Image (spheres, rainbow, N blue to C red):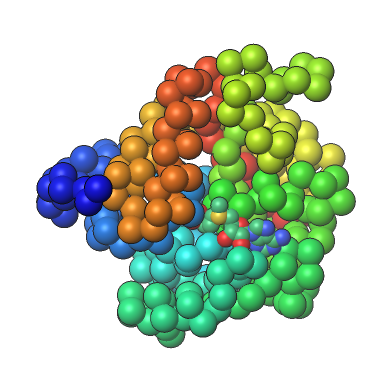
Amino acid sequence: MPDNTPKPSNEDLTKRLSNARYPRSNGYDVRWTIENQMGPHALWLLEWLAPALGLDALRPGARVLDLGCGRAMTSVFLAREYDAQVTAADLWVAPDENARRIAEAGFADRVLPVHAEAHDLPFAEGSFDAIVSIDAYQYFGTNDLYLPTLTRLLKPGGRIGVVVPALREEPEGAEPPEHLKPFWDPGFWAFHTPAWWRRHWTRSGTVEVETADWLEDGWKDWLLWSEVCAEESPSEFMAGMARESVELLHADEGRALGFARVVGRRR
Ligand SMILES: C[S@@+](CC[C@H](N)C(=O)[O-])C[C@H]1O[C@@H](n2cnc3c(N)ncnc32)[C@H](O)[C@@H]1O
């Protein structure tokens, strides 16, 4: 059956997604963000992260590695909002695809897309003023030995900042929280509390952790965004993923799931 439900206008969608917490993100085309999303709203999460990274790490011309940049929306944001020189590194999304999107956005001179695997990054020691990673670090960063391999790419005093899906409390034992069992995916074991991340980074000895906190009501933002993507994504695959997130977040209602922000300064 064809879906004859009228599509909301861009104006309606913009109004629905406009959020006083994320004034910079409000300036981006909503259809662009929906078409290029790969999970939670990447620009909202980066806009939450940026002040904790500090003005020095994001000063004009700063060299920033956007690790696990996906479709490079966050890389464009870093260039547009902070005039940074961004390396947009990703494993699943090809640099040719990202190069087209970056050029269409008008930032080909400031964002360089590269194909990169987080364990084999082709950069010299001290290459970056800042490393950011939005909704990606959980895929590779929980290994105790990983952080030092990444922070060596920072200049001394440089900042690393990540935002990851997170848990309010570490589950005891080996079972997921009871109410999440029907939805649990083994990948969720890489979700942790801000306190877990603080300890994980601190004991690596390579950074001084400056921030490790929880986004208040982050799950509500995640739910609203997932509802919109479930209805509006042009990709049936991404719409299906968003529908699963809607079910998960409704079942949870903020009891367990949200976002952690972690920022460290290279020693
Ligand atoms: C859920 S997507 C998020 C993408 C983007 N940051 C965003 O928020 O829209 C996770 C990204 O992490 C990247 N990723 C996962 N494992 C990686 C690895 N080992 N090395 C580099 N990137 C990785 C994937 O390529 C993917 O684009």
